[in-house]
Image 1 (cartoon, helix red, strand yellow):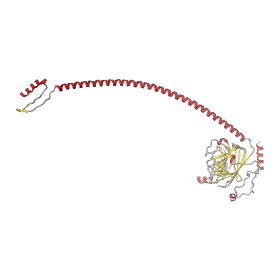
Image 2 (cartoon, rainbow, N blue to C red):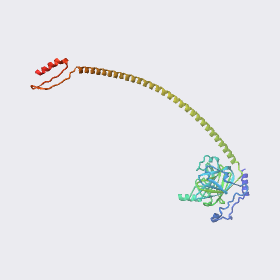
Image 3 (cartoon, helix red, strand yellow):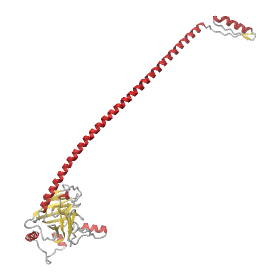
Image 4 (spheres, one colour):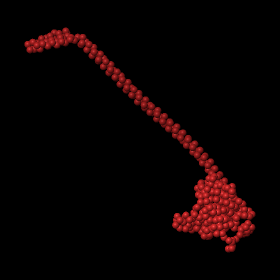
Length: 399
């Protein structure tokens, strides 16, 4: 089956105009390329089975609405925010043609192949897929700046068409490989600089990826896992443009459909599990809220009852204290009243006595005169005591 598929694939490639370069094929110099554009690749997307891809064949994943625009067959990307737009369908075996150019020095972008659906789940702006095979789209200045900054050649990336697995995906890189053993480095450095169009031809068949840059094969890898999935265009901080994006699907093993079916079933299972979990959680929350409400009500009732008993006891104690205080106050008031009455009676008696004394009292007149050197005092007393008083006065005069 595999041999038959390979033969059919080769026949299809030959029928569509796949040519093998020879040493006599003329090569334009850099100045000619700058004027006429990139060299014509072996496969330009002409022939049976080829289909043009437009922005309508992709769907935004985590970029802004204005990040990706299309006009006159060219797809424009602002580069902000970092993110992707992915194909609406999955692919297994296919050929892809794409022309691209960066509009600012050190621009960064890429084309994702065979990215699983799970790699796009939950992506926020600023994030990239967590799976797939990336075909690097990098401006020359990116590598130049890295080398100037670090004072050494880059040993983990180049600006000339690296191919490497992302996240959970796997790939065995064609040599030369990066120091970390994950990237396939290009065998030739053919990428053109900023604002110049570059041509990529990608062949992805039976888990093997091969990349042609401006007409020559330079990098790739085999044993890719998964070997079916979505395609995606990358926005990574700098404006980049794509045009002449064309694809031709080749006979496959049905992995893409099977993968899509499995992912759909898994998604449905996950959704059902999430719904069940949400329902269970909601029921648990409701039960917990009900129990908590009942507990709070019982606690409130018990607290109110205890408070009522405490208040009643306090009121009773206060009433006893108040009654005792009132009784003591009444006794004190009564005593005060009795004392006041006694004082008034005493005052009344004293007043009466004083009045009686005043009525019986004579006016006392004191006359002082000299008689033989003695002072004669004449005191007028009440008549009742006149004799005694006279006797005493005469006695004092005779002395």
